[in-house]
Every structure is written in structure tokens, then in C-alpha cells.
Amino acid sequence: MSNTSFTLFDRVPYLQTRLMIPDEINQSIYDYFLTISNEDFKQKSHYFHGRYENLYVDEHKIPGLELVLKHIKAFVAELLQLEAEKLKFGYWLNAMNPGHLTTRHNHDDNDELISGVYYLHVAKDSGDLRLFTENMVVEISPQEGNMVLFSPQLDHEVSLNESEGSRLSIGFNVG
Image (cartoon, rainbow, N blue to C red; front, side, top):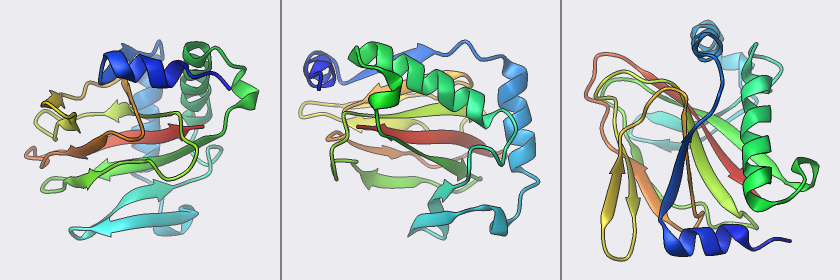
């Protein structure tokens, strides 16, 4: 297996890029997400501060989600110089309403090579991604259509959503 991800994150704490996915698809996924019920989730996990941080839903359940996941997988496969079919890919949705935050954690549990987040819908002031390196804290303001990749070993959190709106993102691990 390639060691690209390990050397990549030795030089920089993260990589940020914009996926070429039409804004209409992101908006459509967000709009559809707002209509689904609790029964539509296969699983929920990481219950902190009154909410589940991870919401698992079948990619075929939300129109457009499969396309976004395909773009994410293709980008990461190219970065790692591996075939997308050879990668294990796990994802979840993270919905942050006003007053929500995501607690500090990392994804160094199994054989992950890269962790990341793709922003589907972002309200202004809905919380920044904070990456904790040995020497500093890097704050990244989310933008719709952007993807941030980082080492699974890197502690990270999302600051308080101080907006009046919600934010929806896709968190993922690739191994």
C-alpha cells in the first residue's frame, strides 16, 4: 500500500481543495436531508452535548450523495496513487445546528490513511474546523464545496455554531 498520506502530512497538517461538484447538487442533498426522518439513519454514534455527531445513511437514500462520494473517493485515490476500488471508504453525515459543536478527537482507530470533511451546506459563523498540531492550532473556516484532508492521527474539533442556521458536512475515513 502507498505511504503517500504519511509523507504528505509530515510536511503540512492538511490539504484543502474544492471539488468540482455543482452547487445545485450540494443544495439538493441538504434540502433532501432536511426531509428525512430518524428511521432513515442506519446508525447514529458519538452522542455528546445533546446530539449525535455521526449520522450514517445509505448513499442511495439521498439523491446526489452517491455522486459526491464518488468524487471524494476518486480524488483521494489519485492523491494516494491507488485504485479507488482498493480503498476502504467510510463516511457519515455531520449536522450542526445553532449551539452545536464537535468535541476534540482523532480517527486513529484502525488502518485509516486519510481523514477528511466535505462541506455541503454552511451557514456563516457555523463553526471552524480546528486541527491540533504539536506546535499550533490551525483554524479552517468551512466553505460549501470545499474538502479538507488531514492525518487520522491529528486531533481535531469543530468550534461552536454561533449562527442562526445549520451546517451539513460529510466526514470520512479512507484506508
